[in-house]
Amino acid sequence: MLTDALLAFVPIGGNLSLVAPASSVILSNVVDQLGVGVGVAPPSIIGNQSNFGSDMGVGGLRPELMISIGTAVVATSSSTLKVAFQGAPDPGAAGNYTPASTAWVDIVSQDGITAANLTANAIPARFPWLPTMPPNLRPRFYRLAFTISALGSFTAGTVASALVTTVRDDYAAKYAQKNYSVQ
Image (cartoon, rainbow, N blue to C red; front, side, top):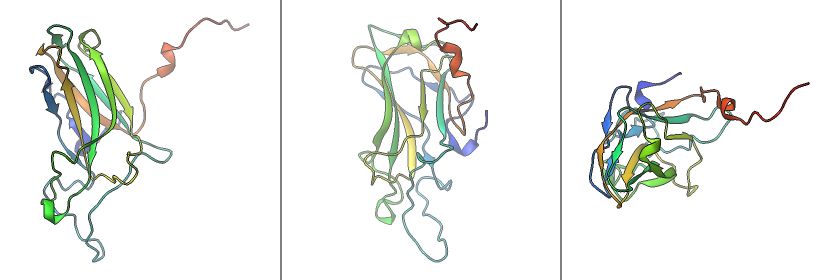
């Protein structure tokens, strides 16, 4: 697996806790496409100062986002988890280069993940880096939002890692039906 430390929403061994009451939103690290960090002005390139924004979900070698569970999740009642990959534009100097809490937009999400699917070492969500919607969003900042449903809480559980890889590195065909024979 190829990873970049600057693209770690939850670094390996980061163990982001999912222990929280109902309707809680747990946020990952914010990844800045420029690599300079939230609250830092974009560097001036060839004298042109502008707000940076890009759409990484296009092209032949599209990044993949993989989230893995560390400690198994224990849910009260019938609580479920929503994992959302979010992006926010650079607000510029007027916003101190820090996105407002209302600026985050869900690019892709997986909803209704039950505790039975959140066991140790499970991969509850794997997203291709999709083109952003709306098309004019052009985010500079990305994060993951883990939302616990209003039906109950989580009393145990962690996210072991949430990483960006350059390619999907598992053998997906191993789950294919084997109801054929070769003659």
